[in-house]
Length: 170
DNA sequence: CGGTTGATTATCT
DNA sequence: GATAATCAACCGT
Image 1 (spheres, rainbow, N blue to C red):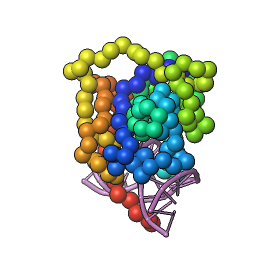
Image 2: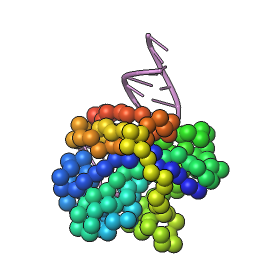
Image 3: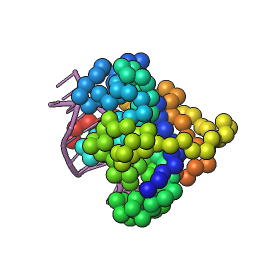
Image 4: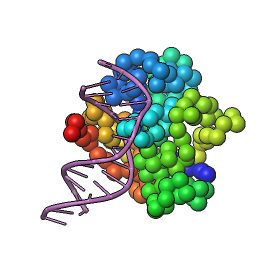
C-alpha cells in the first residue's frame, strides 16, 4: 500500500525537551542517533507504535514524526488492519498510521531509502508554500509552544490539534 | 459536538 | 513507581 504524508512534526535531540533523545542515547532511541534515511519506531501508551524518519547525521539526534497521511493505494489492506475505520481515518494520527502500515518496533532502524525492507519513503509532488501550515506539536508534555508541526492545508486526513492532557494514577 | 476517561506496557527515574 | 510524541468509547449538553 502507499500513503501520502500530510502531517509531520520535527523532533531535535539535546536541544528539544520534548524529544526522546533529550536525555541522551538509550536503548529505545538509538535509531535517532544513527544514520539519516532510517526509521525510528517507538512504542508508547502501552499499545501504540509511532513512525519517525531520522534526518540528522550519525551522532546527531534529529527526526520527524510522521503524524498522518492519506492512503492512496492498498486501501483494502489498510482497512483489514483497522476494521471499522473510514478511508479518512485509516492513517489520521501517528498510531493509526503506524497500524495501517503495520509498522512496529521490528522496523526500528531499517533503511527506508530504497532497500528491500518493507518500508520505503519517496519524494512526491512539491507542495506550494502557502499550502503548508505550521503550529505547536500535538500532545507533548514539554516545549508545548514550540512550532515544529507542519501540515498541508485543507487536508481532511490531518489530525485535530490537542494540547497535552496531564493524567495521573487512578 | 466537546470534554472526560479507561486501556495497557515499555521505558526511564 | 510514574510517565507517555495515543486512541476509542462514553458521557452530558
